[in-house]
Length: 284
Image 1 (cartoon, one colour):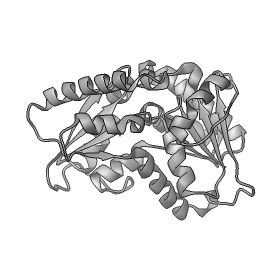
Image 2: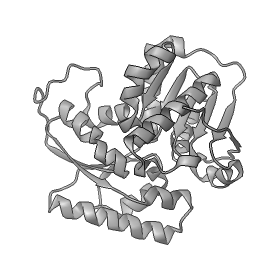
Image 3: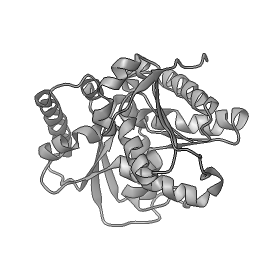
């Protein structure tokens, strides 16, 4: 069984892509709705919440977990992989959304020998729309420029957008907010042409059409859920020990918050019925 974790509903966009790509696989989704949004949390809080969620998913039998929250992946993943997993779950693995996204933008495998400046392709400008904490971590610009120094990364924190999506704000409200975020980034670009946009939060694919409407015509928008699903397929091919049959396929949804409330809008994210059960995080 594969675990998928997010601070709220956003990771369901990733789960949907995974279920479509791996129809015979079992998945366990965990949304930390009690502590959303992570984008306004401190780094210490994000690490603590994410570690507790990993513990819960591993306890439920997941050997591999996808960190579908960009903020958690940018802030907590490296610490968990390097310091916590080897001590507590050496036979388990945690993967994040950052790696496949950076690989797609740069065309360079994550584990390649990357020396800044060793390759120079066509100059490009990439915009990253993300939460405040993901932007503050600077994870995307650092990892992209390390692999593709010709790529200029311009970031913008879409403060409040996750909250709006989680509370099912009207499309008019969302369109207005997104237009303001795009206008703010356009001002920073100061006339520089934009080649592509990465929506650096798994909530944002739900409003990708609104980003497309606000952006200049012809700007590519990267689909992070599809990138993650493709990357997981490659990972399982390289590590068949994690690609074992699950028996009867199941898809289960857990939340640290109110299960009924979490279930109300889940179908919008997942594309089909998703009924949550409440299960609190393990104590730190």
